Figure 1 (cartoon, one colour):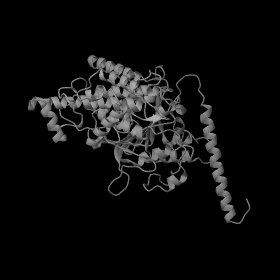
Figure 2 (figure 1 turned 135 degrees about the vertical axis):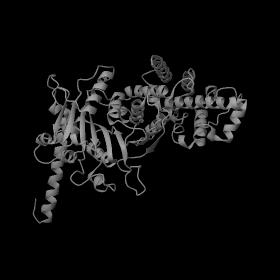
Figure 3 (figure 1 turned 60 degrees about the vertical axis):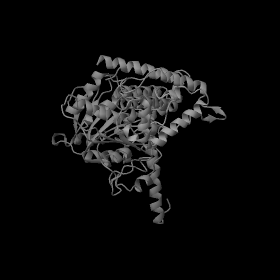
Length: 521
């Protein structure tokens, strides 16, 4: 195990040094769309070399091996139309030895590879390495040459590095980009310890179908496969891998997710598009496809969906009594989509803003978001709620929660919800806090076993949740003993704005009714 850890650290250092070879650590995140495909291509080239060498031992030479795979692409996982002048030379040398018009030539090679491999189309050929802005190259040939040379210093073949090690290193690179990515980082990256907790608590089993409707770079799906493999490790019999499905809105991030899955040696189906308005995974009848497990970290508090988006829904995602959660936040809209995408025994884990657990509770009158939350409590779909430590996420210092749904709760859990306040289980990090391994284990054990522990967790009856106006935030019921904390001012202002907007909508509806009755309002 120690050797593996050393390999991971060594590869992580190399992969980050290669990224920094363009213009230093500060600017490396700006070039992730160039760096990630090149490292991905290096892995493809080295694995292709290994496959050629295997065939060559059987047929007598690499030259014959090249001829065979050119005639029958099925002999290798990915066929690369890169043939060095000397067949004994590595395939990557076709890229490494470029000295003129480097950006243009790499783009041509990438497009040729994609043309031969439908699975890589739109993934490896998305970037133009010769692109310019206002007549200036985005990444000039000198820096591109430096990057290629840095990547060339380590071999990434089957005999050099295991898929899980290079996969972890690739995830490390994505995390490093997230550290410098500012507000945009949360769109493609969830802290690994949060993903580990979610996947372990969901306990995915061999052969299950796992779905992430907002998959980003695919990290949560990968975590589920890792959790499943860890749970069956040591069994003598073989086991089926998970079937992974994801949808992502941003093209560049969609490409990143596909590369991440392949480089982890995991097969999945990642679709591109707006899941909320156009979910791609459907059954033969055109209805939503359902899954065994769902993991998701949707963008928090999306405000561009309107009531018409809910009213015009064709997939029965927003049931009567729940429906539109209000324009200021689509958090509970995403939860409804996820609930509708679960099969009859399905379970889900969703990362959300802490306000999703409490907004509207304690206010006079009705609140749209609270109404949806009430529907989920009354229908006994919420199994547990985890309150996370602050400053874990790269696009916010807010703590966040993880909401766990279960459409087939055990009898002893019916009518009750487990609340876990893990706000104190973290260590300080730079630039972000993190949950240590022992903290992850403690949280996972608490959530799986429904353990009650003072200042950490408690089981709450639905009657008590109703008495507290359907506030399901663990911080409302579990006090950690720390000095009293106050809700952030921006969160309070957001809630006040939502209340004012609902009041305006109610006034407008009332005026319309009075107008129809011929009464001046």
